[in-house]
Amino acid sequence: MARIVAAELLSRLTKGKPIPAVLLLGDEVYLRDTCRSQLIEKQIPEEARAWAVSRYSANRGDIQAALDQARTLPMLSGQQVVFLEDMEAVDKLSEEARETAVESVTAYLEDPSPFTTLVLEAASLDQRMKLAKLLVEKTLVVEVGLGNDEKSKRAAAVTLAHAMAGELGVKLEDDAADDLAESVADDLMRLKTEVEKLAAYAGNKRQVRREDVSRLVVSQKTYTVWQFADMIAARQGGRALEFLDALLRDGEEPVALVGAMAWMFRKLIEASEVTGPMNPWQAARLLGMRPDAAELALQNARKMPRKRLLENLSALRKCDDRLKRGNANPRAILEFLVAELTEEKANAQSSA
Image (cartoon, rainbow, N blue to C red; front, side, top):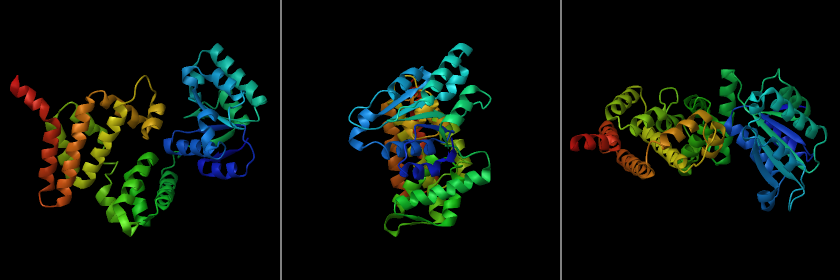
């Protein structure tokens, strides 16, 4: 079958011709989620989605269950969408189990159900293996990655930044879009978050300028927010203050730093509610983050009680208010914040 990029999927779906099988291939969480949403919204009425959309994982051994569902008439809907994630796990099976899985998928794709769109997902596939050759031949392959070419990745991020802003009724200046794409290091999930934040900041003027990006968006190149989470979780006040000093010397804006930290703690609170085992891709989809960041969020959330996470988020809101009043030294405000977030360790030591 054909091979297309994510931006082309919507036009294929609007033609109305059924697509029996799709392979979402790549590791960009935002693009993958966008394609999932399009596949559902264009084929399944909203009132039928509880019955006509199902999700399975090859990593959990669900291949046969997914194929059985694909052959089963959906309830209350003429069509259904069946997602089968983590297909890269097949290549790691024993030879016998791998052959069985490939045979099952082959049998289905040779005679797919007319009322089902089977959506197979993989971050990557070994093109030398039978499974990859089969899926390339029998499915519509949708690239949900940005590739390895830095120039092309940056151009795609800039284009998406303009599109996201337009959907929110805001215009991004060209220089602002360029700086934003560079600041988030082409992380499209974070790009979406930052565009939403900038749109809210723009207010009635409905335009985002380059200086707005400089003020509100912390550069991914110079700031790894999860490093700070590790220091806060361990109550390492000294290290956290040194880290803060380095960021300020690098020119990071205090308001942007607090905004990034608040975003981090909101994600940690979300991660604290996750139960049971979860791989990085599942966590990424649930938390709306890149897989590596989502995995770190889950790890850091386990280090801090929920009560402490909520208290820290409250402290950040107060800090943000103080900074925006503009009547005090920003560095002093941030240093006080770090002391507040890590003070329990000092209290515990003094009482020992």
